[in-house]
Image (cartoon, rainbow, N blue to C red; front, top):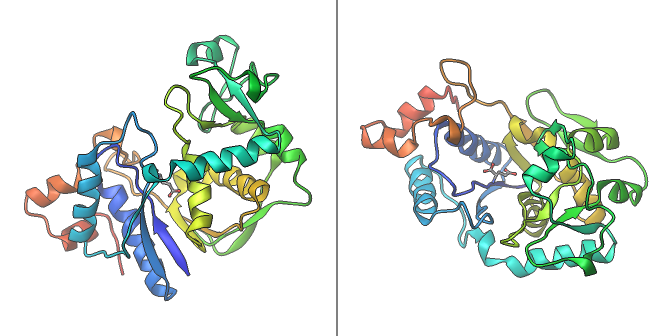
Length: 276
Ligand code: GLU
């Protein structure tokens, strides 16, 4: 059993991250497995070295340990380019030059992950790509290449059960995702995450329910790329006093701040209601 905690060093860790990390390590312990730490630092416009440094510091302070070396996605660009090549050979990628404005003007509606791409550039092919274009997955074409039903096993929130991936859900709520970002050429989260879960032989993905709606897309990518599908455990999110989800953008208090104010790791466990 191998699981992972995969934070993005784009902001300080807060209580929600502590809950997620403690859950990852707890499940690994219960199942006699290993918890890995993976740094998802692919978004070169948003990652900061000081946030990465505090990930190591905060997690060690919480009493968590992980095998070294830690996989830092920014060091493995060639792997993600290989995956893009594989998808390109399957005819599943197209270049896209649309700005956010273009997408809104084309009448796009919002989905789970921002606007659902209206398909403006879907007729284009990779040889026509110009510098700065994003690469998108042609979702409909990818779905058409899959035979049989796609399912995954969910062991979180409710009891263990098999969940069918609905092509309709993917098309209606997600649309053609960007897999290579515009301008920077950085690999997108979905691509790097799915690749590394396979590369690191992750048997159990433990993460918050906020990512659950994207899991069908990850299962689709796994099927297209010939990767195994891990078991998924989506855990409930902790909420602040107003019942709002704690998130980096909510300016929730950083773990480092609690620490500076004299809180102990035990205090943090109590605050987030983590019982082990
Ligand atoms: N890097 C992602 C985040 O910080 C987590 C990805 C995952 O656990 O699949 O939200």
